[in-house]
Amino acid sequence: MKEIINAVNLIIVNNKNQILLAKRVETGKFNNCWSIPGGTVEHNETFEEALIREIKEELNCDIIWFKYFQSYFFDVNEYICRPIYFYGEISGEINLARDELSEYAWFDLENLKIFDLDLAFNQKEILKSFIEYKNNEI
Image 1 (tube, rainbow, N blue to C red):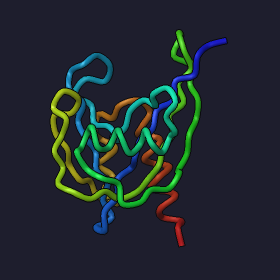
Image 2: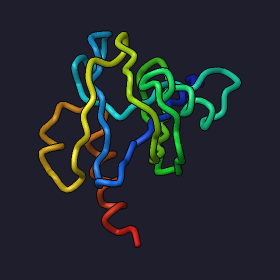
Image 3: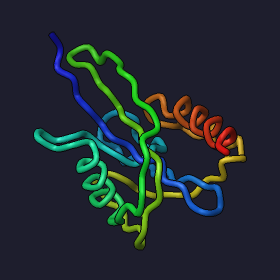
Image 4: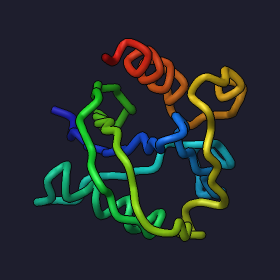
């Protein structure tokens, strides 16, 4: 049976109805693509612990609050990947881990130009789903 690799990502929102995306550096897959911040879960680490650690490592920020959004599985030949998406807010001044990310920007959720960006993995679909979820939120 293939190993399952878990990854956690935080769709970071602000009070202006924007989300934060970060551009990946040239490290292999999805070079120079925009991405939802996050990373892989380490051995003996909970999803929540991994999320807090990854946001601290990548953005040098703390998470104020977060909620589960969605997850799925996909086959990557040698293993199965399970990205787990949360959404929430952060605090602190953003200071990127330059070995992983080259820049960041806030994008309006109502602006469909976000879908013209080169997004890593299948994150276009994740963001479409998140926007639909936010539009239906009461």
